[in-house]
Length: 132
Image 1 (spheres, rainbow, N blue to C red):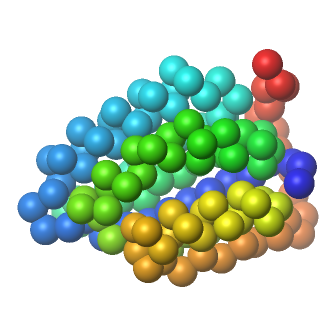
Image 2 (image 1 turned 120 degrees about the vertical axis):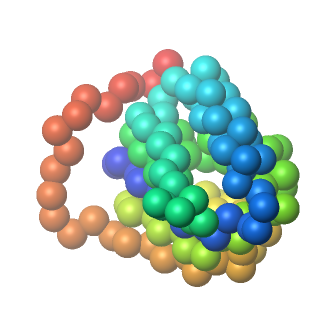
C-alpha cells in the first residue's frame, strides 16, 4: 500500500445544479488545500458545456487518500443532489480499506464503475512531500 496514488472520478452534473456544484467544489478544494498538506494535487475540471465534472486527486500514498476520505468525507453526501458519478478510476494500489471507502462513495454518488489500474512501468518527476 505504498507509492503514488491517483484517483480520477467523472460525473454528470444534474440539470440546473451547475452553479451549486461550482460553489461546492470550490469549497471542497479550498478545504483540501488548507487541511490536507500531504495531498499533492486536487484539480476540478468542467467540460466545455459544463455538463460533466472530473476530479483529479494525486496522493503520495494510500494513507493520504484515506485521510482525504475521512477529512472530506462528511461533505460527500451533499454532492448526491448535484452529480451522478459515472466512473471512478484508481491508479496505483489503494489497499482493501481505501478501496472499500471509494466503492462506497461511488455507490452513494453513482452508481459509478470503479476500476483499479496497477502500475506497470514509469516514474514520477515531481517531489513527493514526506509525512508531517
